[in-house]
Length: 299
Image 1 (cartoon, rainbow, N blue to C red):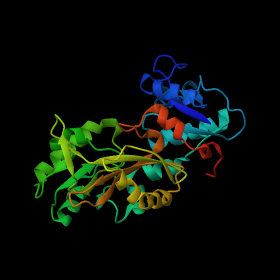
Image 2: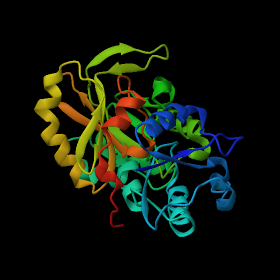
Image 3: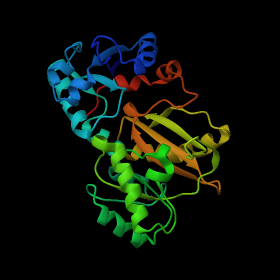
Image 4: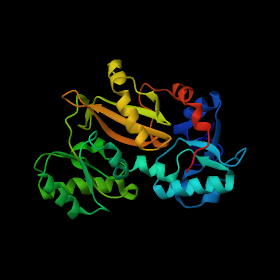
């Protein structure tokens, strides 16, 4: 199996320090590690981005990505260049990447299992306010299509019930400024779900009983340890069914328990850009990755 990770910013032949342990673990479990230069990709210089990328042993060699989040455009450019110039085909095609990574795309697969959500096309404050008012101004979470600013909970993430327009705009503006050039798609409003709180960060952000699961070809192969192991066993059938709706070969899913004891899917993501949760080591992750991902797939 072949693994693609970003290289060090200054040394294209060494792994990014944040992914060095994954590179080590992958190599020790039989992976061939392939590097690319992320900064050059973001500058739209594909030749420099792939200058240290080895050539695949045969055309359409499956390649698993683990690295930083990419925009849809960046991912598609990388996918095409790797396939045409180096003989690799990323395990998830661009449509599969965007299908799990962008909430408006994922939402259709999560109906009834995730908090009700609405979104705007672009940073449209008026459209977002109209949607919030139509809801009756309930407590809500704001994010863009990809990410929230939850560590800035009070000023850039959470809308208390009955928020007025001035406060509403200030929260969306803080989110927009925080995400800056990474702001993706538009504003997303999600009805606040009362999740089971297990603590609070120094920033005032509540910590919930939440777990991350990884799926390969629809099967869960890695997950954060559940506080009550039986909760995973009792619900894995539902989560597996949801994962299979996506058609993604490599998917992450975050699930959380509500105050009433029910389970919600908080978000999904492409498995390549989702961090390993506490309790899942690089070694255990790569030891568990199914060999099926080394088989070619259709776009």
